[in-house]
Image (cartoon, rainbow, N blue to C red; front, side):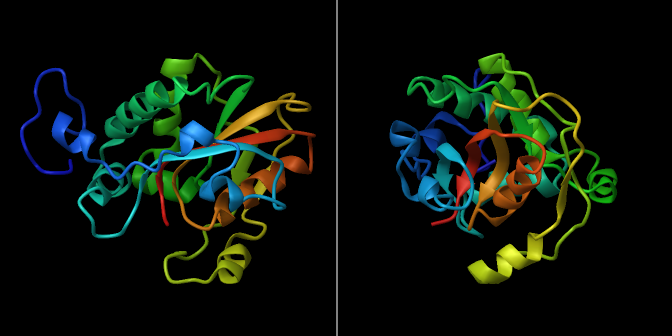
Length: 213
């Protein structure tokens, strides 16, 4: 999905050459203190945060995210989630985490797309870690407009009150791994976690495929 070349039998989504040259962040090696984790400091009870590669719109690597979100390739999300989880596990990234929370879509958007890309990525993570996926603890009640050209303040305002905790499940005292496809300012993840914090005392780590510099 990066270079367009034919994959070998043992390859998924990206070929070995493209995988080798992905613009990796290296954040998983220092998941407690890196530029991605710092975006969440003083905003949510963050423990660790890491994304695999730096995301830039229009770049070759952006084809992966575009295929997963817009070109009806949920299986690519699962494969990438599994691949990244295997890499992050070598750094002990998942130690102490109790469950996975995929960032939800509105029901309307999920019907239109047919799936939630964050859920598909979470499936791959769960295959590697054995962690349970919780899908009913929080719901998205509004779809905000695109975050692409907004400032940090505008991003935060754009997703304010976009999520609602359902009160389902016993999350109190749990360490949750919030999974999203791309983290830019962190506003969407923070809004999701803020909703969960209203019903439970939680610790949070964040996992994504892409990170915007």
